[in-house]
Length: 342
Image (cartoon, rainbow, N blue to C red; front, side, top):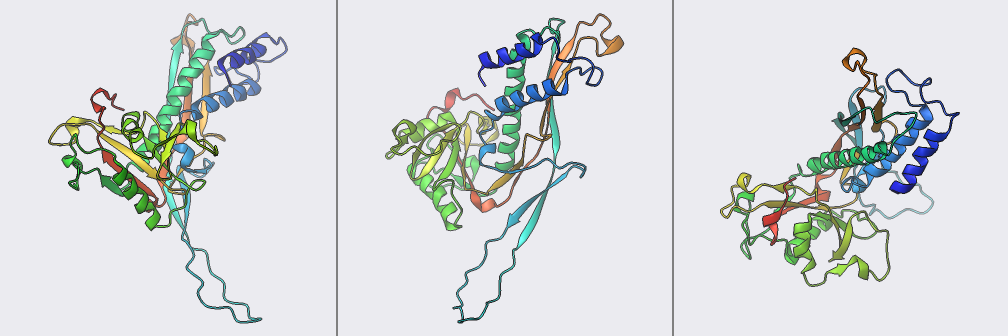
């Protein structure tokens, strides 16, 4: 939803004299259920724009009344059925092999304290701007939670020093770039395990600095030149070697002073992903909540009714399901000197 449309919708709530805003909700959080649902819907929509890593995850609902543990399920592929069928004879069937992968959910959140400009009965534009800011914070936070989970994978390729192969992060130097050969090796690793694709292609999440090197490679096809537009992913910039590249500033950068590299260069993590590689919790249905506290809700802590807050809280966990379906390439970038560490 555009900022303009969001502003007019919020004003519709403010200008409707029949809408209850202070009697149907708990004290200190005096939004009607309808209004609270409206705000949370927009918070989720704006936060989801930041969830680049989540778009390739298997989604699971937030568990309710089941403690802090969520169970992800991993299915083992069925073996080949090479025994010929006998006429008029029903063969033995196969059993599904399902293993459970458990993870513990955690809560994340943040809030902004506002002055008494915020009045829930005459909503000011400040609530629109604040909602945008906290939605961005929530999205970037939850995006990084998923990124950190998949960056813990052990299926790693270290970009060589030119043509010299290396086997450790500490050996990465300024010649260790994401080349066509490295991209092909990452793709090969996925294909060796018959890893499933997204609409016929694997995807790769790459930092803009590394993306600059990829764009220079032979065979690069910019998204604007797709002959037959497919479903376009958030952040997609183009493709090469049947790998669709997704650009995101939240792709992990490891600072030069922590790499132990001989030439002190930042190390970039580039993730090659197959379908079903990892899972995460959904935002809707309890995953992300907007919380508004009106002026004076703090009682004697706010004796002059001068402060209100707008915040968010989310329950989240992400987990690798099939390690072989993820390949992390660690490299540097030609233009890495100006990188903003994340």
